[in-house]
Amino acid sequence: MSAVTTPPIDLYYWTTPNGWKASIMLEECGLPYRMIPINIGKGAQGAPEFLAVAPHGKIPVIVDPDGPGGEPVTVFESNAILQYLARKTGLFYPAGERARIAVDIWLFWQAANFGPTLGQTHHFRIYASERIPYAVERFTAATTKLYATLDAQLARCAHVAGDEYTIADIAILPWAKLWERQGQDIAAFPHVAAWIDRMKARPGVLRGFRLKPDPDEPPGPASRA
Image (cartoon, rainbow, N blue to C red; front, side, top):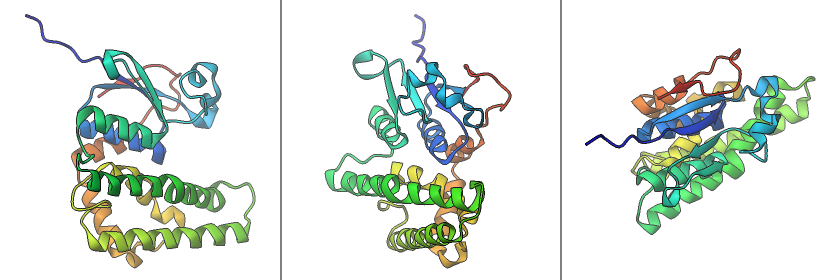
């Protein structure tokens, strides 16, 4: 009798904090996947074939051929991907309602505050065509406040949403590891610094961060984990 082969999940991906969320989660869950590079530096996110799976034109996106009821499902928005894969596998998302509420709070905090603010900080500090001191100072200061919030939380517990490693950690880590680009002094946030070191020591996290598409490769299936 032949073994049942699990079809791989398609991961539309580029090396960004949000892209890393999906690659880390797939690695941590041990799910087979194939990476489809979307070179956002060359505008591939605007290609019609990508917009067919990602109406907003942003990575990451996954297409799971073995979705609910055994039918394919497409999921975009990085935190929605984390929740979907957590429910699919039963990993990194607690079953208890109180614990799940804590995870959801920090997922929404990341999506509404940490990610957008740090993204604007990256833009005005690194990518803007002209330096605008007001914008740099405003977003760098707002980022500092967010790190202080995260540090206070990690002073109370080992992981972002409590004592257990969850998708809240996976959502926040890819942004937090770029603290230097955000003009932050990580020594001012010792609990965040220690947490980053612990998270980066996880083999699945390391593999997720190491997933790198060839920038010269045309869109299409590129690799499988």
